[in-house]
Length: 251
Length: 347
Image (tube, rainbow over all chains, first blue to last red; front, top):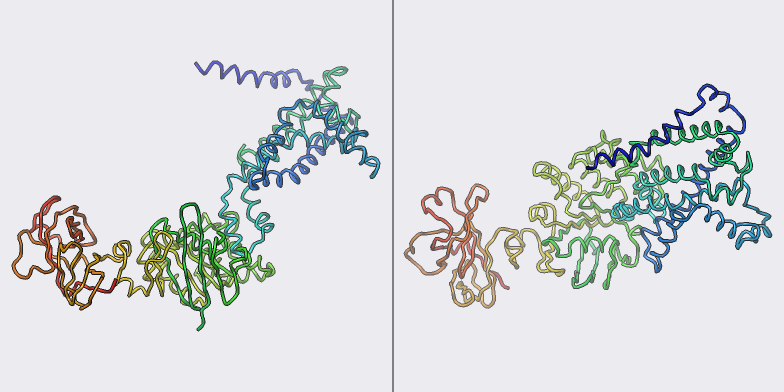
C-alpha cells in the first residue's frame, strides 16, 4: 500500500535531476563552464552565501542561545517572528528589505544620510537578502542544540571558576557544535539557492549581484543550454557539500 | 585550629525546606548522609553556589561566601555524574580550572599533568573522558576538582557510579587524597560504608533537617532514627528506662540493657544478637517476645529473618540454624536477646 506512493515520491524528486543530466550539453560543457560570466556568477554565489552564513552565525547563535535560555516576556512572539522568513515568499522578503533598508527605507534613509551607505543593488545587499532568508534555518537548529545541551556541564564550569562568557566559549559552544554545524550547512545551502529576495532587493547586475540562481533564470530566456550548465554546477556544488558533511553532522 | 566553615543553609523549594547548620575545621571530612530526597545534593549545591540560599549564611575562612557566585568561590566539586567535559582530553579537563584562574596555558598544562600523575593517570592524559573506565574518570574528576586549590572540596556520591571492585580501590585512593587535603571536604552519600570509611564526622539529614551528628563510631553504635539504624544494621526502639530495665511502649516487652539509665531511652541491638526458638524457652521473661516470621532472605553468609508483631526486628541466623528451625513465612517464633548485647542510651 505504501510502496507505490513512496516510489512516486522518489521519482518526483529524482526525475527532474535526471532530466538535467540527460539534456546537459556534455560536449560543449568545458568551454561553456570556462565562460567568464559563469565563473563570475559562481564566484559571487559562493562568496555571498559564505558571507551570509558567517553573518547568520554571528547574530544567529546568540539569538538562539537567548531564545533557549533566557526567559523573557514575549519569548514565544520573538520565536514566531524569527521563523517568519521561513514561510514568507522570498519576493515579499525582498520588498520588505527595500522598505527597511532601501534609499528611502526606515533605516536605509539614515544609513545613506549619515554614512553614505547604500545597500540595495550591491553585493552587500545580496549578502543581506540571503542572510534574511537563511537565518531561521540556523536559529532553529542551534536553539534545538542549546536546549538539548546538558546544563550541568555549565555548572561544572562555574565551579571551576569559569565566567559566563568563558563557559559559553569553552563548554557550551563545543557541546552544541554539531547543531551549529548542521544549522550552518542548511543556512549556506539556503543562501546559495536564494532567488526572490535577492533579485528584488539587490537586482540582477552581472559580476555584482547576479548570483547563480539569477543567472540560471536569465539564461533560460535567451540561452537554455547555458541555463542547464549553470544548474548542473549548482547541483554539483550542493551534492558535494552534502556528501562532504554527511556523517560528520546529523543531517 | 579555628573553624574554617560556618554555615547555616536554608533553601526553600515548594513544600521542601532544607535547614542545615554546618561547621567544620580545616582538614576535616564531613559526610552528609541521608536517604534520597533528604536534601543532601541541595546542600552541596548551596555550598558550591549553584543553588541560591533562601536564608542563612556561609562563611569560609571568615569570608562571607553566600553572596558570591559559584565561579568566585574557591570550591572544587566532584559531581555525581562527574561531568567531565566530553570534548576535552583528561589533561585539558584538569587544566580547565587553573586556566580560568588566569594561569598561563603552558603552566596550567604542567599543573594538570602533575595532578594526573598524583591520581595515577599520568599515562592517560590525552584520552577523552568517554574512553576512560569508570574508576579512571572518577580520578580525573577528583584531579580536576583539586587542581583549582579549593578551600572547600565537595563530593556528590563520589563512588555510587562504580562497580563493587573498582569502588574498593577508588575508595582507598580517595581516602588518601582526602587525608592530604588541608581544606574542608564535604561528602554527600547514601552509602553508610563510604561515609564511615571516608569521613571524620557524619551529619545525617532527613527531610531537610539534621537528625543526628557525630563520629562514625558513635553514630554506628547509637543510631537515633530508623533510617540510621537500618544503615548501620541495628534494631532500634524507643522505650522508658528504670535502671537496667527498659520497657517498650505499651509494656509489650521489657528488656534488660547493659546500661543503667532513667527516663526516655533508645534501645539497640544487632540482628546477630537475636536467637529464635520454636517453643518458649525456659528462664527469665526478660528480652523475650513472640513474633511472626515476615520474610526470609540471604544476608552475607547468614540468613536474615524479618520478625513482625509488637516488636518488629531483624534476626540473623546461620543456614544450619534455619534448617533446624524449619521456618517459613507466617510461622510463630520466640525471639530472645542477650542483655549484654542490648545497649540503651538517652533519647
